[in-house]
Length: 197
View 1 (cartoon, rainbow, N blue to C red):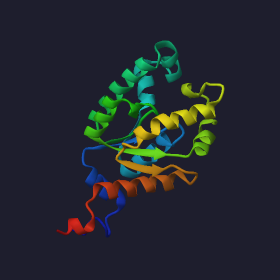
View 2: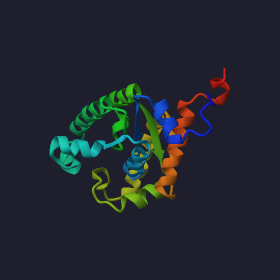
View 3: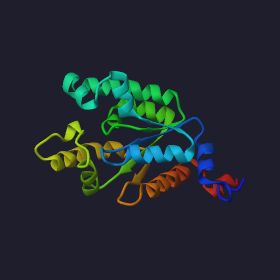
View 4: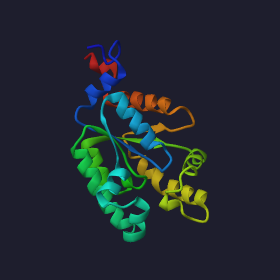
């Protein structure tokens, strides 16, 4: 074995070391989880699922409607059930909603069946992206930027528990996908010195 380097394409190496585990993208709204996830899945020949879309399909309601009618706790219960079901069907690439990873039981399911990747982005990057879409229930406030800052304060320490952290920045999404793949290979493959022993 060549320690993972050489002629084997990164996609093939990653599929090999991933096995049956899924890649689970976590992070705040606007971090690029769905966009990066879709492209990553295509590169790896894996199924892509967006947990929010799956929740909407299961409930027959939009996420803002679920929040309005049933409240956040009920939404989080449904979210946990959907994520657990999707992870059982792996390997796949799964984009989760911004609050999903905060729930300890959901984190545990992800740990058991996947590799978590925190797409971390700076406040200005997140705000630029989320302003393009008005369907963010948690940002329907007087001061969305202050709300996002407060979410960062609460959620970043929990996201930091993810297996891997990759910066989602203002570069092409394909560059971020490359960063994610390189980080995954580094995380999953033993260093060449250990592989040679």
